[in-house]
Image (cartoon, rainbow, N blue to C red; front, side, top):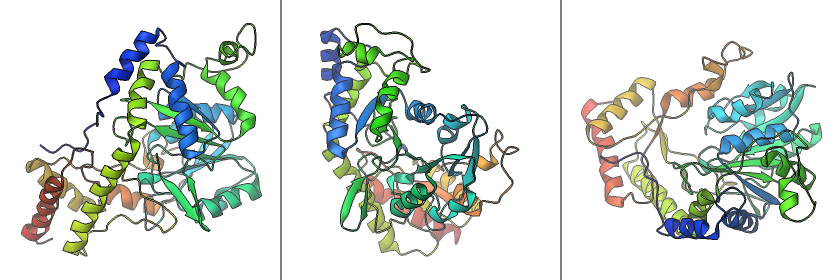
Length: 381
């Protein structure tokens, strides 16, 4: 069986975990937490990073930091994971869903402005498959309306936006950004995440929220002589053993990214050489880099996709679909304003993700593509 995903182990994870244990500080904010945060800040020019136990936690911290309250409106894509919405719904916000682009599952930058009202308190963008939202016009619009932008960069580690000759890391545009280190991501620690704070004015409060509503981080830096409960918060920081695992991944990121991009490019070559008009390949805008997070196909119908999933599984290959649109979910359907979001629904019905992980081989990719080719040939689809 060729799985959809297989977490990659660099070989140094246990070494660093053992060192964390030997250091005698395995709870949060220890040696490896600081190493990971510093490395991320230096590598991608983020102002301040805080490791979290998940990307969901990072998004929840963002919602708290922006003081989202009941009745506030937050604009975000419908074609995303539930965590993007859940973090703001838990604060009482009304989520206003925007449609996907017609050429890419990411949010349609031009479908946002008409959704802005006097109650809009944030715009959340998702860099789907690690491919950048067109950030220049989006940030210009957000600045005009004085609305903070949050980047859900769960899939976008080491991915960049290119405009006017400048290259800038995804996650460095929004006031706040959230990354995932779940085992399905390029860089992983089993479970894990990171909040990026790009507004210096939010750093102090972010640390307090991160540390259960206390000023404990200031205390351990010697900035105060005692610490106590000063704000809301929760236990968002991971154990230092998790950070140690993550550090082994981060220091190997160049190799990991090179391999994943080579696998992505090989898929693309194989399908382009087939030159089938019956499938749509991923679209990469000229302003976006590709971090090799995901390779997907867009098929002609829901039924065809399900048949292909079954065909691949019967031949030992696990391929999967992706999100169900949140505006059609059981939880939010009755809360949605009733607008049709046709592009989100189109991708939800037709998108198929193929296996892509570090240890996948070119030979296995060739086998997968040949299976898909045979499917279309034999079924005369």
